[in-house]
Length: 563
Image (cartoon, rainbow, N blue to C red; front, top):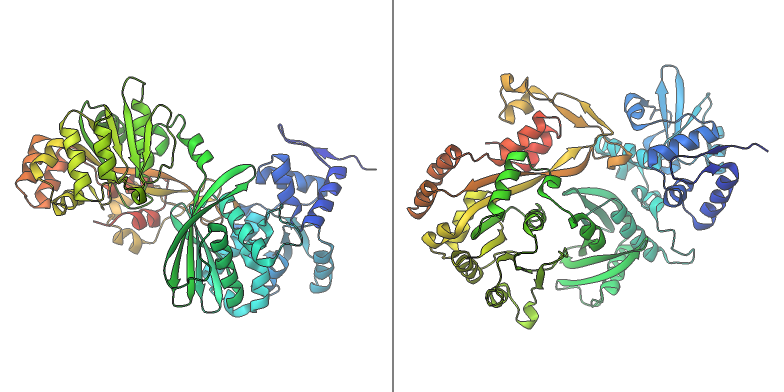
């Protein structure tokens, strides 16, 4: 008997005996060997593939190497490659077959009959293979035409490969699909799941790092309706009502973690669409514990200003930006840094997403009459030092918050606006007195989240001159930039990006700017005064990240307006 064993760090060793046991379990549960080893052995994807390659005496193909090879779609068409979960590459006069499941006897038998030339087998991680297919699909745009609907049902763009191992063999197809989608979305660190009805099909998309990513398409109108009905049942919604929007929520346990899902059902011309917001409160709490502004990606100058504004004895710090731009996280980071136990800190939020130790947090409950305005009035009678208002939505809340800031409290709050200067217009439309507003306001922070290039697949790549010119960058300035782009790999799910950093535009109120706002001077004059006072705009922050090679020029243009 051959004694082969490989071990890494604190991970469990892989030997032939254990591998045989895992293969048996994989066959019984209908999942991949690599998935079981990842979940039970504590390996990183790269680590696991390298070790399996040594154990099986198979060369390993990493994502960087895949990008350097040319797929031989003339010998093995794209549709057939997806169906058999392998890719044929051409290197000089030789052929390489990249497979993610080398244990499949069915695959080996098919390959022996399929190819009439010598083919060298290479091991590739399933996530890298999925990422490769995703990249190819973007360029080919022909998947729907070349694949029959029955085959597309089976592919699911990799969803079935990531199905929950806890699902029993006798579970229905609908339940298996829903659970697999929830599990895969959580594993991919998606913030939302979009289920969109089309003509006779259901499109599945994840929002990862703020961008929608297409995962797959389920053919069949009946199956699509059953999926939406299953979501409704889990959310305790009316499955018979299909004409009006419905909102609900449910909880499930994934790998011992309790995950909340907020559900929004919306009728459409093809049926009903569903959007599920994923809230992993344990992960958020772990993230918030010990959270500082340094961890959010702001540059040091912005951090210093936000810290100063957060440490003022009274006044208002206002954070603005669109939904999902990280406003609440930034406020929590600021509050965490000033929470030394000497001040009474009270928050009112809708909903409470993070739990802060030593802070009184009040959830808005409009059904019971607890609105932002009413809650804020009660907070002021609770002898607070610092107050956080989750969002200013109406004139009443704005007036109370401003009065609180004018009477010796430090108020942290958010409002939806595109930049720091649009905030002035928002409060003006609410009917707030400009003099009171600027007297209470210490500063405004506008922020965005910019995706970071994946460190595993990012390469130096200069965009074409037309894109550089359209981005407002001169040829002389371009020479100072470290242009890079992400090619896409299994680590980033083929997107080329992984993780996000925050950029900020900060307006500090001085006497000149206050006078301009009260006099209702044109925004152009206020911008000039802000520039002279040290304000750096969002566009500059995004281009700084491009200059440093942290993100791509395309991402900077997606997040900020070319001025």
